[in-house]
Image (cartoon, rainbow over all chains, first blue to last red; front, top):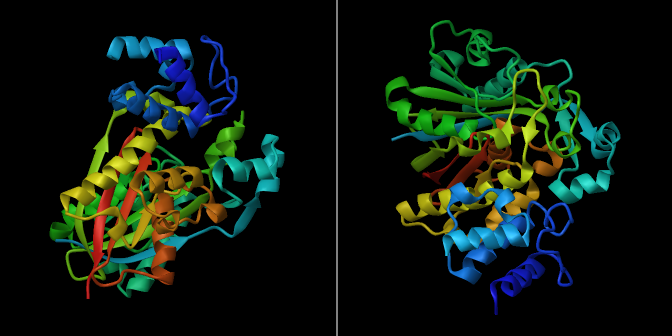
Length: 77
Length: 310
């Protein structure tokens, strides 16, 4: 499974099973993620991609869209 | 070694319903419950932070059956003091008739009462009986225009107190940890005469990680497991956050005392108000550990482990 497909699967897990956000679409503004789904998504990203995201990187802006998450993962995996 | 001798609390009498709050900020009462678990809060219309704090102090001292003159120090945590200085701690001391006892203000939102308890546990061997107070008049902050719906619905007014002593008490403080990180200071802050600024996503994201980790660390350091804890007394920020922390630790939600439905988030007062209520209904039981935990603007966070003694 490629990175984007894996991310989409995680987003669907923590939000809506039918979610299909555009790569640059804000996951918050679109209503897919609320404040309490965000920690779930971050935890799932850590588990899914085998990384540990430090507290200093826990800035919602870094996880606001598929493209931003991909960018973060490229820098940290 | 330090002991918890007693708790006390004071809540102002005026109950503000979600219907009343919703009408002020333009939202439904049910929406407030859904996003926060809060059904009502108390507002101190005329009373000040000093008034609230003094009432909680008197309640705590009365329950402990000790005189104010037996106090060796007062620590008072608040984020809603009415003026820059002098802070409310010395004003409370004055109300209690104390004119030479050292007083220290802790201008810290939400986490202040736990930081006060930790400091008191370290200072009790020198100063004896230390009264820790958390008192907040958050209504004076959240009713500032422009009111932000997501912020205004959360907060209430109240005060809690805890007496910590070097002498014996119903609970021994086993260990504690406190930490701070200013990297996200702008995500939850209150400038003078400005509305409270809160980036809820950052706050929840950070709190969801830091609170369970603090609890796990204090338990691990002392060879305890979460399931062994009699009750968790946590800052009452949001019911959804309390549930999340319980889930992260793998314990039942019922293990976390919660009164946020009745009082909302009373910032630095909330944990001590919760502790005082729990004390009066259940209280420390010999050999059973109790865990306190908090997180607040700064960010500041921490945990404290205590155990009932025979």
